[in-house]
Length: 111
Image 1 (cartoon, rainbow, N blue to C red):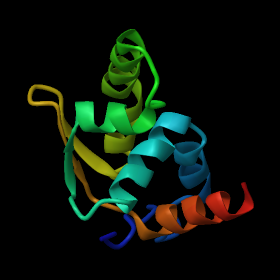
Image 2: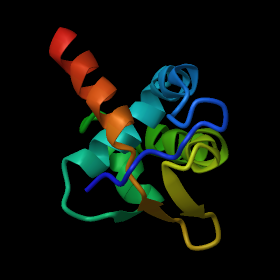
Image 3: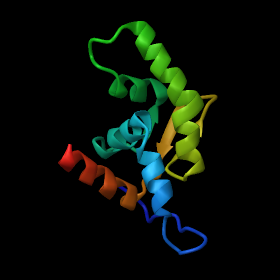
């Protein structure tokens, strides 16, 4: 599902610091994990918030997570070329970055 990684302008490969910075946030990691575990490349912000949350979480917590995704995590992932986010419709299209996914898999193996 992942496409080729967008090149870094200085080295021709994704900047390692950008990859680690992307993975440093739990919500951003969860968005990538969501798309790794589903065949779809499009999701709603509500789908993503539900995936991030504990199944026993309160409704208020779901709203808080959706707001954080909307204002922080998704815009950051969009700037880094991982997703395309339409705030008006709440739709997120995953572009995939294979190198990012590989590092995320490595993190999961060591956890």
